[in-house]
Length: 97
Image (cartoon, rainbow, N blue to C red):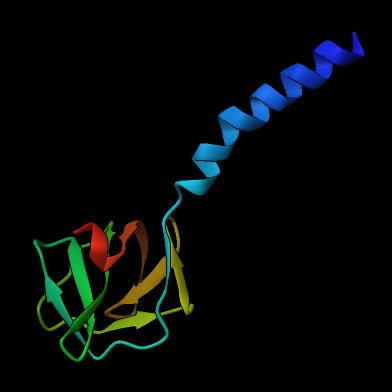
């Protein structure tokens, strides 16, 4: 019985592991520019180098003021856009887009 429990526990671990690893996070400590890709997608830049692409649950304008609340952005984190809290839906690295 104990051996079966251990096998089931290992199988559950193997099934759950890809879900936890697939959560996208990026370290972004500073950006000085952004470009809109639609009204809810923003690409943050440092100079001419793209740092991260984020999809948010609110509308972003070309004149919006974007502020990071943390130096490490993950799916589901909050970000300030025009002094309103918005939820980050997805975070992608520059190599993914």
